[in-house]
Length: 476
Image (cartoon, rainbow, N blue to C red; front, side, top):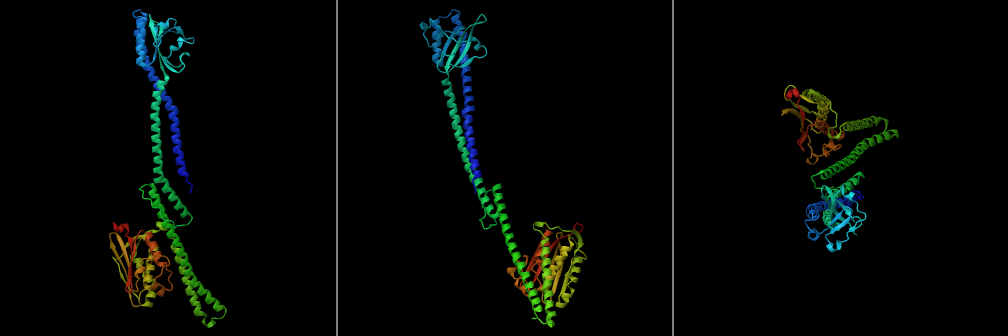
């Protein structure tokens, strides 16, 4: 089995990690550096305004000398770590915190300076009109006098220092990304153990089942979730399919056996009559044997067709009606009058009340009674009694058919409901039996969602007891 799901998950997690890394190195990096630059600009702008409104104003109003102004700017420079300039409107550098006063007798002029750049913003990032070899954060504040701008205070801070702080924050982001990626792959490992590996095992076994191989070991997954439920369902399906396959083999084997014997007899007798082995005066005897075998084949075919009407899990269509069970019992017993006279068997009928109304499929319940009574007659001794009794308990009708015949061996009790099953006693006594009668009885009672049980002692007799629902008007 190809590990496509596992590979896809790995690729998905890898893609997640790569996309996360790209986002941190691009979007997050840009946002962090922009944020750090903006905050540094705000801080420098406050300082630039202080210098403009205090020291620069004192100097322009001749209340402070150039040397004093230079001294104040140098102190601020050493404290803030940035150059402080005072420039004129023409771009001349009048004061530089890092250039002595005596060296400022001939001020430098920035040739590309444009005062209109200061109108819409208070800072810029770059070389400040080509003056610095590296990028600077330059923040400026105007120096005003008599409602006019006479110059600017400009603070320059290397952008590398600001970026270093941003990169340290980004390093934390990369560490966090690494931790999250590690956790993601740990989750992948857990998912692989708890989901992918069980699914692989289920798929492997399901593939074997699909190929008809039910000998595979069952999938044992002790999980109280959908995976565990799927595993249990698959195991249940395998058991059912295996049982079905075994039932099919048994069915074919039994049908073949039960059809082969009478067909072989019929074929043999007819060939013997055709080639003269059986003389004409004896043919009537063997024709009766052939008729007997054909009747058995007809009965076997009818039984198979009857069983075919009943599907598994209650899919049988029933014609439910309300009828008098006692009347059906009496009518069914009358059909066995000839057989009972021949074997000198009598019926003891114990019925609860004059009539007993039940809700069921009349024709099918009549067939149940016929099969059970017929079975009782077959395995009863001569001069014996068969008891048919009805009792009422908790809105349920209990019907009992009890004989005093050969009984059923203990080891056969669990198999009598199987199709074509015949116990040793049955094979000895019931030459016409097909082994389908009790199977049909079981299917009919189960289709009614009722129960049937058997109590038997070998050499003593057998009792079948089944239940039926009492009619609603009777129950009420």
